[in-house]
Image (tube, rainbow, N blue to C red):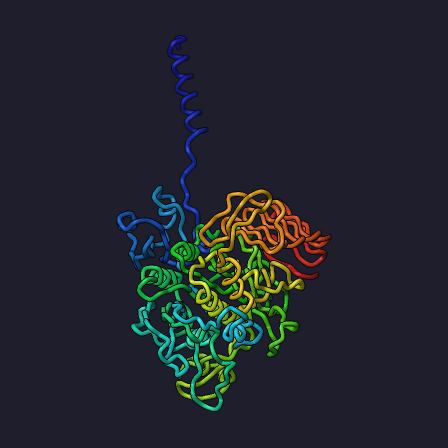
Length: 546
């Protein structure tokens, strides 16, 4: 072989080796946890997947992989694809991520107690009483039945389950709707305590759960999209989601969380149940059990309190079943706050399967004037949705993020369970309404903070973070300074307890960066495990105790 041919052969080999070594890695769509399991070990002949994209892209994917378009969504669709073609679909360059169309279930464990709603109804000093008048609340649930206490309150009903009717044959949605906005009905058994938190609000009934109490994620997404599209027509300011499914992927990829984010960006406050995975059947506490869409940073995520049936707040405790944070994948602190959710008496849907199966749930009355009791973060979320209506009536100019902050600032912190169990704490709607009117809603004279002249206003955003907030001054925008206790922007200082930026310090208890140290109890390191004293190890599972 001559030298020229040898040099040429070596050059070809070098090119081949370089091409092999530096070839672009094969594309693979991000998958929700349930779909990743199916990819590793298929268990079904067909898979229902939610894919993002415009309708032309969706149609192209369906044609290319022989898939059926089961449901079109505003920002994608549900495709039914054969399992043997699923792997190829995940490698398509037009597919960034795929999520399973998993079941969503009510956050139930088979009214004014200590929420401050009575004070909000009556009025506080110069702040007039509120009842949620003029606020539309979309209840996405199992439907709402005709009940005397809801007469004149339901202005629209839409079914997304294919059943053709918005009637509630399960019973959960009617109970939730009653907590939100029931008025007083007739009968000697009816007590003012059975009124909803916002008896002056009106309801939009969006049925996304079927007669057995379950539904598909795409049903809930379609209902949210309808609420966004019709928000002006029906004055929808609030969406209540007393439902959810286990977290399968980061919130940014979760289609249900994406729908929540779009609703909030459209100006609707979204309230979601935290879920009821606070403990296992044997009593073992579970950390990180927040449901989707409660893991959305845009939702107001609500855990459940046991008020022990008293109006006093001093004996309120977090229920053992209420889900704890942080959220899986994203490790965000949730819930945002907690509200009464244990043994809540509200409306009973006539002939519903819940009471047929569990007759002990029935409290009083009959027909379309009956009452039952349920527990769970479903009920707690409904309480907060009613409270949001009170706040928005008091100050209709509030944006969703500002509503969340007003509610949180009005809370009573629960040190026994901390941020991961109770968030900002137990709701107090009287305080929240007062803050909504006299706090961030006010437009006082300009003030000087750390040499910067600012006017607190809902529409004025502070460009600088004052270093030494005085007195009771408020700066409301991308940064908030509240009294001497809160600086809220990219960094938060809450009293002398929290610094929240890239890291969190809570008193002398938490440092949260790449690792967490909680006193001498928690170490959260790079191996994604938790050691809590001698109680928890979190790797692929949770172990609490020996």
